[in-house]
Length: 305
Image 1 (cartoon, rainbow, N blue to C red):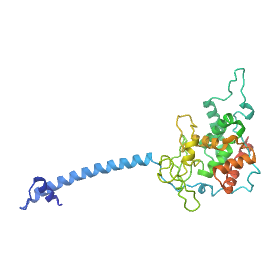
Image 2 (image 1 turned 45 degrees about the horizontal axis):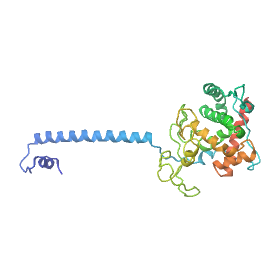
Image 3 (image 1 turned 120 degrees about the vertical axis):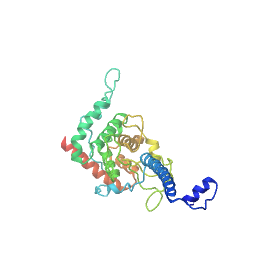
Image 4 (image 1 turned 135 degrees about the horizontal axis):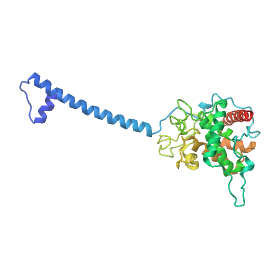
């Protein structure tokens, strides 16, 4: 419908007579201005909705468990025969300090603020030597300390968690992501759809797309690449903010520690270490890559004292 026809329809009659050109231009211009305002409002509103969805909904990315690991050379070690160096966090309680002290059984656990301060100093010194973001090292260290106190028989080292974090997501830095001070990557890390294609397992959606943005199939999420169904079982608040989120590295590292230490596993033994890591990803080559990185991290840390 033309502008003239639209105007005539509004008045309830068809005007077939001559039209004054100046008047026609004025009226047409007014209609176009009004149309322009409406379109502008719609565009602004639409862009606002898009921006909100962009911020709140996870986006798919090409991340997979294998891609960040391609630059890691697998260690020449047979599963179950050896473990990486079992370095512990410098400046914190050792395994022998887990026992209760005092007549009232008072815990010797350092206060959280003191622990974090010690870890920050340790991570700032060690991070550049390992090519690991200090913020990630703090998360791995906190997880080690936590399970050292809650499950001392597990004997899990931060170096193993760091090895997994390196192979899975380059410590929350895969792609264009930057690990921020709040422990979140600047861009959500989300793996490929587990749709059964190729060598990929088929896992139907278990979270309604809450964590991975995919309502059809599950995808691994976050720095430690948890599948949503596994996250629902092991989700934990690692940074004490009252929430648990698989993209937040303190939460993800502590959840990974609980996963590895479950069922009373001893991560300092060859059998226990390999059982734990292969339960994380059932691939010998994957375990050998994690071993290589973890052992390198531990050796470097021990050499620096």
